[in-house]
Image 1 (cartoon, rainbow over the protein chains, first blue to last red):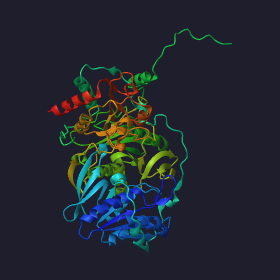
Image 2 (image 1 turned 90 degrees about the vertical axis):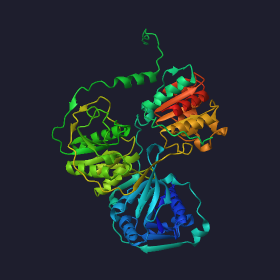
Image 3 (image 1 turned 135 degrees about the horizontal axis):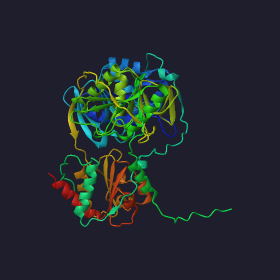
Image 4 (image 1 turned 120 degrees about the vertical axis):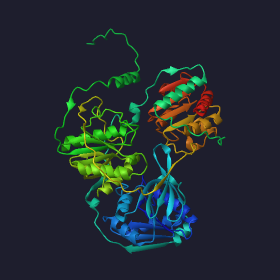
Length: 256
Length: 353
């Protein structure tokens, strides 16, 4: 099975130096783990953008991608139609993406628009991937409060990977140099966003109640309970009031 | 000529206590009622709600919607998605909501977004909704992007300001994007001020719930997976149990974190001593955290540590020293031995029915 990882153009947040975005390196890492368990598993990287972007994105080849395909479009052209056309004809049935690009608008909406265009389902905030029975993958999705939900996702599907799903790895130099980069022209559609004004953010005065600490604790009376059990009850009552004492957790005896 | 000082004796008053008192008295009944009898359009806020109450993000959304309603005309409407069995536990009138749509569906209880999107899309189609506002954080961020693509829209994300008919949005690399206001707006957290409490109540008229049919779920839900508290990312945790130099029983500490389902963290002293790995250190030189509750066991509260929990809304502290900074910062301050309290907590939690 072929797994495709979509690449955006990365840029270091401090210097703007072009690079492979860490969130997409995490997606490549999940793809590598999945492809290793699949018969005939292979990873392709796909990017739509100016041909000059191929240089920094070669790092994907050193992180497990067998080849990098670049759909050459101009800097002010919309990558969405090019990607949709390429994915509709390719054999890929599982497409991984990062959460938001590091350059450009970085709005994180492209995967959703792509899913709607292809008519594929989309799963977001994915932190782990495993092969399940034929035609499905098992996903672990992050929810608020650090909870994780397991989903069995039928393919084809678009999977948005959380940037912290995998620790950053080093790109292997040999495969990075040897790997194939295919550059082909793609349908050019002008991007609506090219008319919007993108400029360095103006410094604005901070709102005074900006931090939640403004409504946060401001000290309370100090209590001196007689026994540890009384202290424990005070703490449990407090947690119950905050709604943080959920259904009884199974006692984990295996921990040291 | 120097005027003599007033004769009243100087009194020391803790300003933090004043703030607390002010917060308590702000729930006074509103003076007047805002009425919008025949609005030209609706500015719809999709409230996230936490156990039936408005969250801070919801209040900020209402504040942003009121700004839009003032500049564009129209009324502030709120949509709440209630799973069956849940009730509203806030006063929509005091929250500044002109119109309230309460939508209920069994599909809202699960993780699958299809019924939420179908319900909101149906509401947007049934009413004269000019803008839909959602928080660009938490589950609303994904819901808003899905809703926008369903409506055939490119949403404005990370909106921090409205200017004329434009939205200013955060963009990577400390840049901002100015674009015409689209229909779906994802509002950045902390960008807009919530309405001041008790300012002007709204009449909160009910909106009829439209009919909708959701697409089938795309994926099979296999349920929540129990998380290992020791590996739960500190940035994600709602409850953090932290140990410091005063924590002497680390077995009880780990057992407590497991029983509470909390993430483990520590002060620099605890990490230096090897009781916890370095990536669990909270403070200026470790991780800056903001869980809903931070339970500090045996941490005296060095300034570097307090900096790391500055944005944390609720703190519980247990320490033997009644004069330490951590107890002064805490909402529940207990003078006791941290290890004994941890042991007692584990016994209580395991003994629960």
